[in-house]
Image (cartoon, rainbow, N blue to C red):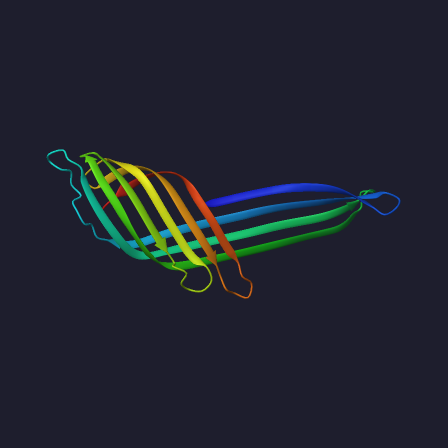
Length: 192
């Protein structure tokens, strides 16, 4: 994920008994990037093949692994003050940035219901971090969706996903990242 936003704001301020005015301009640009990489081993209980008699097939697949979360944020702030006569009096620029990379233990499970040989429903949930490593270190992921079989080991997935990240370090200059993302997800799943 990569997000960027910027804005400009001007304020007129009256000063002193004679009503002199001053204009203060402030401009800010904020950049945020986030990458999440999961590596896990999974074991399936139940069948992953359709029932030859046309019945429903249910399987449960717990998994364990690691999640790598990489988050970077930067803020570029510019402030200037101009007198009524147009003379620039104060100008300042400040650039702040923060980045965190966390490696989290990951534990989750996937539930799959095969409805027809070419269509199945699934739900997956996991949690990572468990507060280990100092500061806040927690991530949670939930997905509910449907899969259409394209080949022996390939599915096209349409799902609704919720991802929750809460990271905070314990450095001398602490920084934090607390976000919830939700939305539709379209994906291609290839199993080995």
